[in-house]
Amino acid sequence: MDRESTPGDGAGVEPDQLRGTSLTARRGERLRISRGPGGEVLLAGEIDLVTARTLREVLEVAAGEGPTLVVDLTGVVHLQSAGVAVLYDFVHHDLHVRARANSAVAAVLRICKLTQITDVVLLDDKQAVEPPADPAN
Image (cartoon, rainbow, N blue to C red):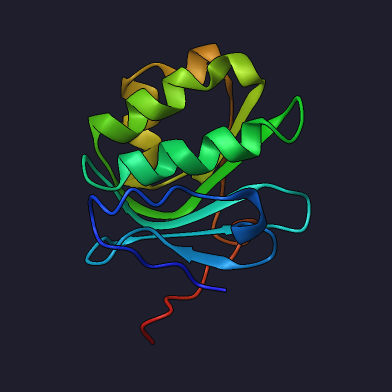
């Protein structure tokens, strides 16, 4: 079940919307979110000031499901400071982050020192999980 809503419609992210489905953040946003078989949050696209709100909602739901929170950024091509701030806010949830080793996202994680305060695994292209499909295609 894909989810689309317009900004400001007050619709939150419900846990049942994240199980084995793809979630479209909000109309016009460029972030795709799904859950992997182990409960990990799989992200693809761009995390910026607009999409960070949806990311926070999704991580709040996922963090409430268990002691460990795994966020896969291997499909993310752009990570702004708003997204880094969201990740910092979840470090106390036993946060584990995966990213492509030779990506701009990995460089941002290093520069922002996230690699020093939580578990960040940098994967080569063969190890990376395929990002969620774009529902528009």
